[in-house]
Length: 262
Image (cartoon, rainbow, N blue to C red; front, side, top):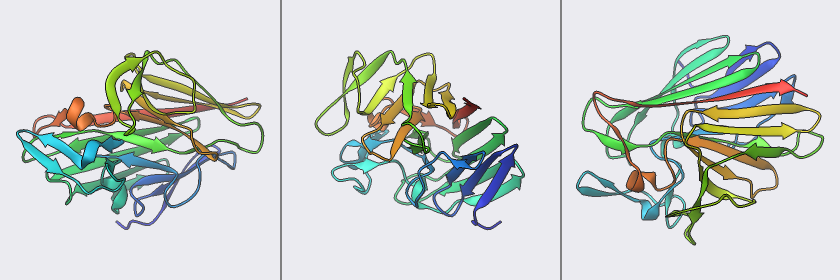
């Protein structure tokens, strides 16, 4: 199947899926109102096979140190699959399944599958990384850019993390855990019971981001958007908290965005 844009619908919800632009969700409209920042780099893109920054683009792969391109010098950032066209495996009115092969510069073969499923009041994104060859560390995450303003008051964000990862001068976690501090943020937080964060556009819409994963990065330093990014580990996690993908055990994660009118 082609990599042309796909439109999913359920009730008055409409989602644009962009296989040809990194497998991202390009838009989410509720009653005709667009929730995601528009533009080639925005929407909501998948972060695989790592999330956020890797220090100096290097990670330990067994006993070998691997070097990745520094696409956010001096670091490598947000994985590789957002830079590739994905294949559309199948579509229905309210669901799309996309796949993407892991290729160079990632050193291991693997397959990423993403399921994008829409209902009248929720969007569920599920992603897996599998391999039939050598095992490797990996991460899964999503990077949505929610519009700060939908035409009324600015959005508010409510979440209750157990801790905030101390951020070093290089924007990477130092390993120290702090009591959560007020924003603005470009920071990683721990939520051991699972990610739960609520975005409220007063008088318009409430949207809840949930995931069974225990890590979330919040980025709200730009005027236009607020990013709430559930992921399977912290930035630089290939080095500090690796999750292994093996031929017997893929890595899988899910996030759900559910909403209600106010």
